[in-house]
Amino acid sequence: MIEFERESRTPYSESYTILEDGGIVGRIDIHYQGANVHATLCTTADANEVRIQALIEAADERLVMTADPYREDFIVSVWRGSPAGVFSDSDDDDDEDEDPFKLN
Image (cartoon, rainbow, N blue to C red; front, side, top):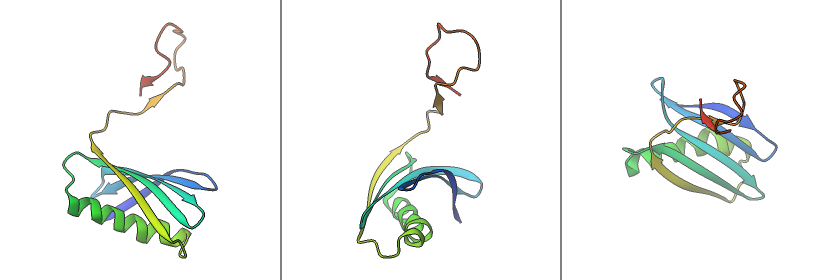
């Protein structure tokens, strides 16, 4: 079963990690703009068209339609690839010579 775990939310956007059977299978960022909803779906490199369509349909049904049932269009840009990590500019140590964006 596809599950969505919210990472962040603003008045006009939301970000979710997509999970299935306890493992991460993607991420989706959703942006509400008037009558249209735009999203960027990032999924694993091995995701086929059927898998991508299932993720889009689950996001539409469980996230988008519950927020805006009268939307006109749901436009999704899809990226397939592999996770490279999470980067942050927070400084956990006092070495200022390091690159400010580092893999956590």
